[in-house]
Length: 539
Ligand SMILES: [Zn+2]
Image 1 (cartoon, helix red, strand yellow):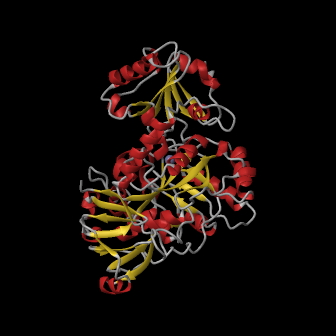
Image 2 (tube, rainbow, N blue to C red):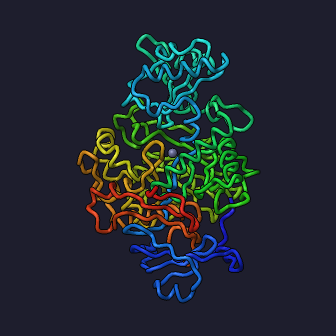
Image 3 (cartoon, protein in one colour):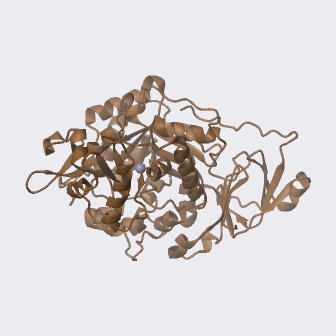
């Protein structure tokens, strides 16, 4: 997890290194400059200035006239789950199924192809579309296969009777710490598994085998390519995959070795696979693929109403304050061990109580240069923001959640929404704020997130915490420079300055002049990674 060199390796200038000059629409370089043209060689920006000057300096260069209205640095989604999205497609893919009947039929087909006793897994479950599933319904799929349907939030799942038996769950008391088992009025388990009740067998750690089926390597790789192509179509050139195990690390490494990893990928390794004595080092091409930290999950979900808050709210768990997933002792010991080994922790903490716990532990560490991350960091106040700034923590709050879930946030958290997804408070405190969709929990489109950050209104027009609004260029800054800093990449990414990678997105509208509500309608014309086109809206 070593940091990248502060200055990039010089681009080769000899034979074979061809220079391109990018011209066309307005270029917002992200560092306050607006060069008319960019010269690119071997993937790096080697000069910026007027078209005339660059043409004189590089007379043999190929000119690329970009089609569109605005060029911005390529978007960087600092917390999303592309490998989980890809692997969901090699399991029973529930994405487009219209109702519970279709879900059960698809699972039954998979059960017929699966040896008895092996897991049949479908995802993502979206109850808004297919309704609520339970153990009895999944028992109609098979009584000789354990069956699991995983909610799109990755915070809960539903199992059939064979699944509950395979996991050793007979009564509510069998739930592990940090997990819950759903129970019917008559005391019988209803099949619902919350947080660690399904997550521990799904991500069991080094040496144990997961209940998750992984499909064939070629099916995995094809699905990952499709997912990355969809991200490129949103202008995304870099992302940090916020949950990998060795299986997903291997999938990315294979894709890189095949020359098919068109995005730049950072990875957060799930803590139960991270050995402090042997933290992953940089691979063969760290500008394409590297591990940037160790992921832990301290509390529940923001839009699911399970995050850990200081004061009570109508939480979905019925516990009053939400759910703590990792116990204090295990959390503290893991943070200390990773920090002592020179690694970065990236802690999922949504509620203000969870954020406070992260700060308590990090403030107690011996001083080191490592800048740890708080993933989501959803509910804060000025005092927590001050502590985050002093500890030089990086925050990775949700981008599009106010537009997507604003009404639900109001229902759960009331007036506290003024301090949820607090981009303005965090930026004003001088804290690094990265952009994040949490895809596939939300659409990956950064322009939807930018609309949310700028308007703080829902799709239905409800305003949620207007005091947290930021301007459109600041929102772009979150999704470019902020995200680059969240993986120590600010020396090579995040702006279109000389010496940075030529990663850029071309938009069909100048977002600085767009109506705020219409920001999410802006489309990407083309996306470029290292000066190579990875997406164009033209066929
Ligand atoms: Zn996540």
